[in-house]
Length: 322
Image (cartoon, rainbow, N blue to C red; front, side, top):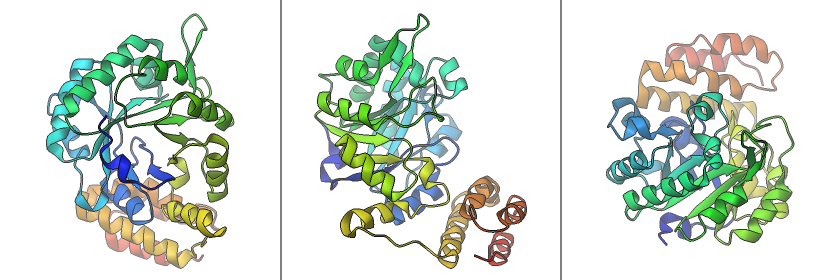
């Protein structure tokens, strides 16, 4: 089995989980700086990457400062996964992640994401093709608790793991919610503890980790080797360091608004440097996350969603009182 960078990481592993439209290069660099042990690109569709699509190649661009970094692939065609994995070897990423968990209607409607669990034979073909194309790069997978087929039968991530049992998978991330209630239901960490019993390799628990205390509890309940943190990072890339501080000393630093503002400015400068003026427009939705919870946050958001230059970003943030 090719574990690659995974075998060099200390437990618990804290991964910045992939999120479409969020985990671009500037965001990954910020999360890495503030404690993420592993970062991952947003999902890149194999039907595009396998054709050397320019936009997909740009999304797959990685930087030495963010390592270890994985490229996540989505789609449903094993041959396209194989070709995409071969391309990724040349792009310099440290690993490949396969998406078997996305619940977005567009992705599921096209036969990808968590809907792939409805065809476990195809899942196995995809993983095998990716491993063959990946060479020495480790291949991991991300999935969720379960999905129902058209007859109402439940196919679980444990069923998937059993189907893949003898393939060299480096790590598995399990989101503790189902496809049928992907955001609203309570995360089932007890289920992930059941996965722990059947999967002896590196296991990451995912879902609902919005505070360091929840992270600590999730690790204790699941017995996982680490966590995948997604929405809990919105406007709080320092959550990785907070979790590490809590696990080490029982307490953690809560940044002041002045400290948060500096991180937001750093994020904006990276976005402009790496993606130009359009990077700041893309960043608007993330800038508003930094002011969540502040008094008069609604007024601040109105200014932040209209910024087009670095000067405007700095002025808007400096006018905020924490």
